[in-house]
Length: 151
Image 1 (spheres, helix red, strand yellow):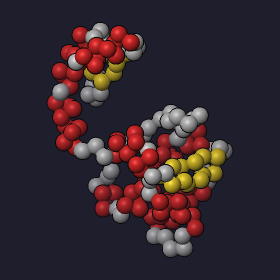
Image 2 (cartoon, rainbow, N blue to C red):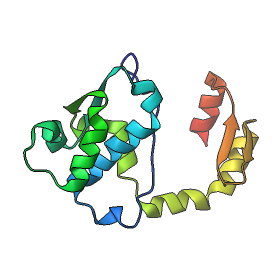
Image 3 (cartoon, rainbow, N blue to C red):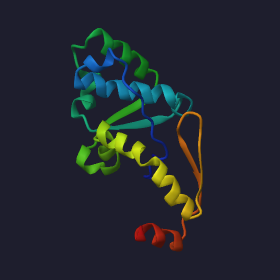
Image 4 (spheres, one colour):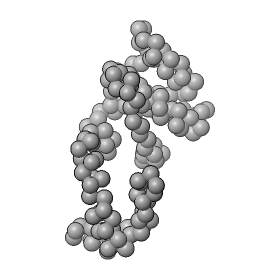
């Protein structure tokens, strides 16, 4: 966050062995993953980690940790991090993204062609990359917002 606004999101797919981790460890996987991605921004800076998993707040003061948690704690100790509890219901955007179901994502992929046609009619320039990702370049103006609401 910068000036109270989120400046980046990150996501990853769990590896097959990570799917068996308990919830506490999965939350810790996310923290370690974010630390690895943004390490060049975080090194030498104080950072706050907001989590909706309250037990992570007490991670550094726990007496008993498994080997996986100990390894991750050692990675996090190199950085000046403060873990803060932030209830999931208060963090609407992240809470919504974390609760997306696979079925709804498949439905989004199914309407991709119709979405492309609708956006082209609004004069939004789109292209599909080899990876299947959509790239768009447009400016939102009052007229465009009105046309989107009409659809």
